[in-house]
Each structure stands twice: as C-alpha cells, then as structure tokens.
Image 1 (tube, rainbow, N blue to C red):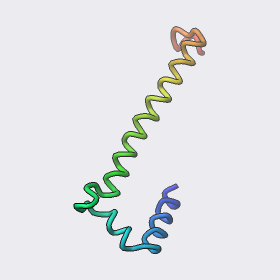
Image 2: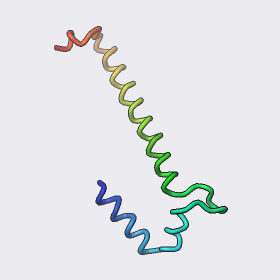
Image 3: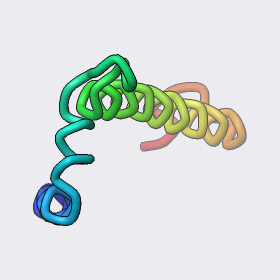
Image 4: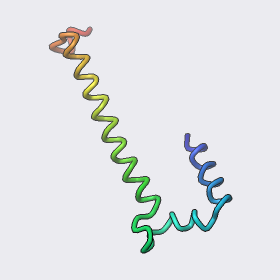
Amino acid sequence: MVAGFGTTLAVAKKRSPNWFNKGVMATAAVPESGSSLALRALGWGSLYAWCGVGLLSFAIWKAMGVHSVSHLL
C-alpha cells in the first residue's frame, strides 16, 4: 500500500512538476497544502471508520440479544 502511494506520487511529480510543487506548499491561490489536506482527510476517514465499525458491531450485538461477553463463549 505504501509502495503504491509512493509510486503514484513519483508519477505525479514526473508528469507535471509545476503542479506538484504548487500542491506541496500553501499559497494565496490555494490556502491549504496538499499534505495538510491529506492528513485532515485521513483523520476524518479514520474517525468515520472507527465509528462505523463500532455502530455495526453494536447493532449486531443487540440483534443477537447478547447481554455479556460470557454469552458469546
């Protein structure tokens, strides 16, 4: 996964270095750099993933009628 991400970055930089460099640093035209946008998106995505899995697990737990972990074992 990391290798794929690195390869994609390398190809993007090779194809258009000017546009790639514009995304690295924040400017007046683009007030947020690409890396800070990506980190913010990763944070929100992680939060949504954790909440979604928790909600799904809770729904299955309630649908099965389990009241404690000892019922599962």
